[in-house]
Length: 304
Image (cartoon, rainbow, N blue to C red; front, side):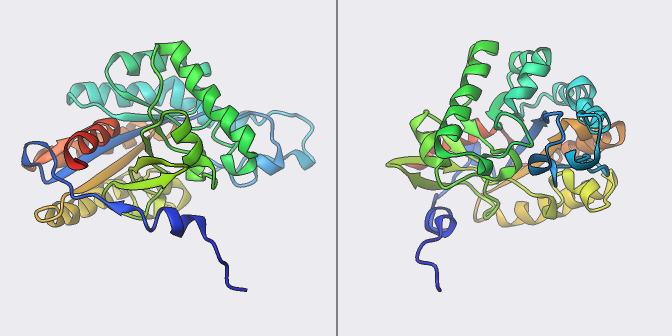
């Protein structure tokens, strides 16, 4: 039977394009997206089956005596303990601000890191409660409760709430946009179907969709490990994608996003992040901005 309704194509594929003009005549907007993530530790097979970091798959509950997966927890802990600080040093060195997608559980585990990145002027983006409990596993009411809990955790920790949302695993439900609109969010970032922001509507609310990048593009560093890439491969992918978008932006301004996962911000990866930043800064007409800056610019200057 041919389906009569497909939520993605009804909402996202039909999202209204925006005639973009970046500030000061910039051609290309570049947003740096940090990811500070936390996983639950109990190896529940329903939640953990395909949720892996690096080359190690989390153990599942069927055949283990110990209820904790310490190996995978150790890999993930690198992000909040070590990687986040490397990324913050690089950003401070180059005078840039980023948008950090942060699980609320990561804020609980690494409050000093979240306080520091907020103090340095980086954007806090809601990123579900835990990385391995995706919204698609929740009912509508559970999803609403999770979104509200995430807002409260950040509000209590740093005195401000997020206005942008990237779902854990970039997997939202048919209710996510509606719930985000009800809770005062301005932008959503799960889609990867465009090279520029656009408008989406749900529940009588309009949000700006700020497209992200997945591992296939090479600009999401999870691809380095899931596809056998190296940090040096990431730099090559960044340069190629930057070159094409910069050329196209001469007549149709675009947005480029590079993901920097804190748990993957090893020394070699950090070197690549910095070289990518230097490469983009060497071109005129490039606007480095937080994603909330992009959204507020569009709201104030491009939607009148």
